[in-house]
Length: 307
Image (cartoon, rainbow, N blue to C red; front, top):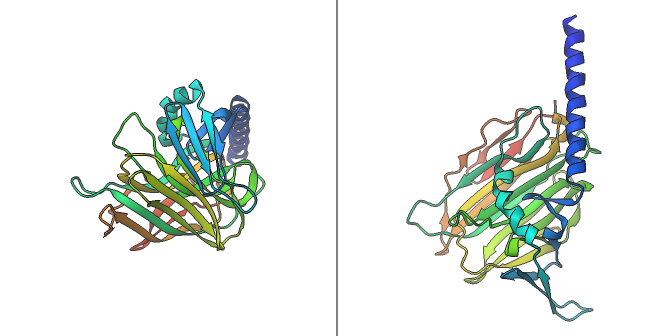
């Protein structure tokens, strides 16, 4: 009797999760999933690799570099008012704590670090990512975002983060990488995808200050670059993180198999000196025996059981 009851309860739970997932999909049909949560379609732009992106008022300015076939050019995009409204909730959405039995959406496993008060801010963050195994449920609707990132947390009214993001899902049941910046003119901007990544492959993520007002976000795999130049003015990046952010995960089989590694972690301050972070784990123990932990002095991994 106990076994039958347990089986019945599990079926009810799975049915509830499926219904919740469907309702979320219907409600967000006119939205695009990004590493900053679901955003209205008109608030998300993909631009050519190497583009410089800046904002002036409600204008997003994209300077596209020349190629062998086309000269350089500049495009202007007017940010719709709803993008500013959406930004009012974006930080809470990204940091919201998932609860059961709801489908998990948001930051799940992460560590972060502020330089000690009075010391220099950050100018560079790099890491070699090692791609984990495909999810057991490799035909599901889940999305997994793995990244290192740098944020300007000085202004409580601003949300600004630079990220090279390894992704599973979000429309493609495979591993790929893109560079992201949020959010010039309240717009979320990405570079094109580099695809073809397999379990065990390594890729290189870079966030680097180039000038007083320009930062480079670069994702590099097998000699290919997908790059954004964020012309963000006087933003001060004073917080670094290592993160797994997930959407549409409703079963342990939706997680990647094995560990995702962030190796060769390197942080450099504004004086060009390498700094040693004291990473703070703010996520604690998470679902499916999830953990983010040090593999060595300059390496972290993220892991979830698939059962």
